[in-house]
Every structure is written in C-alpha cells, then in structure tokens.
Image (tube, rainbow, N blue to C red; front, side):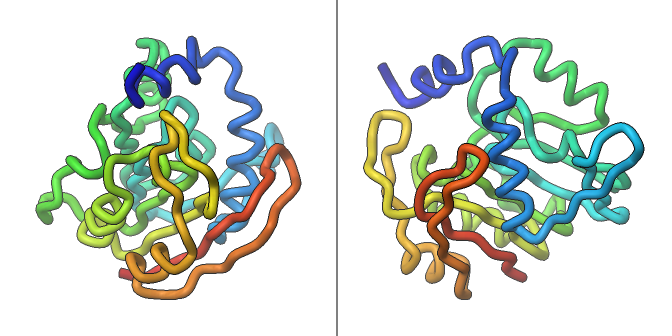
Length: 192
C-alpha cells in the first residue's frame, strides 16, 4: 500500500468527519483565527474579504466555515467521493486535486493567506510545500504536530527547528490534550 492509498482508506467515504473537524477548531484557534456565532452555528470565521489558499484541506477544510471570503481554494492530492467536490463547488470554493509541492509556484495567483494544518507530515517534501506557500501568499497560518513517529501515511517527523527555519520565524510549541488533539504541537502566523 502506498501513502496515497493509505490516506484514501483512512478517510473512506468521508461521511463522518466530526473527529477531524473537532480537532480543526483547535487548530484554527491556535492559528489565530476567531469564530463568531451567526445564530445557527458558533463556528464561523469572517475572512473580511481576504483570499485563502488551503494546502491539504482534505474533505472538510476550514474554508467551509468561512464567510466574506474573496477567493478560496483547496489543494489536496487525495481522491475523495464526488459529493465532496460538489459540496466545495456549492460553497464557492475551488478544489484542485494536486499536491502542495506541485501546485503552481508562478505568481499567476496571489493569496492573502495560505493555511497549512496537520498536513506536512503526509507530504513528499514539507520544505517544498512551505516554500511554495511562501511564493503564493502574503501570510501563512500553520498548525503541525511535531516530534511524532513516522508510518506509511506520515513519512516525516517534523521538528520545531525545521519549521522555524523553513518559515523564517519562530512558532509556538505546546503539548495539547483537548478535543482529540493529543501531542506536541507547533503553530503560528508568519508573514512571507
């Protein structure tokens, strides 16, 4: 089994993503995003007209919780059921089946923000993904697990030192144990 197949098998039919979405609420808060209640849900993010590129957002990107987004795009190499792409399309979010390393690094698109959360340990080259994000966006919001063991779906162990070097700044490191988030986390907001 290859890494891509492992990822597809892990998500399955994408019917119940609640566990991942619960963790994403923690990621979002750590990445400096704030929620507001719109009378229906307390989990809405007002992007105030900014454009956002989500690298590795999968079937339930945080972009699905955003309002007032100028332009939104998810880039992820994993193949999901067709209904996932219809959901994005209905929400006005472009979805591109492509890896963060292969996503165009030309300046044909420029984003206000790039979000990277719980994805780098899954990639071919975490350093390339960050370099590409830095070329594409004015600001990177990131949340990643660090000092974790590798396996077929997580071929990289990320470290604080690596991420600081690649991002050109210092992120925050914290041991978490909340809402399904358990482990050593690295997060921050980095201008490019």
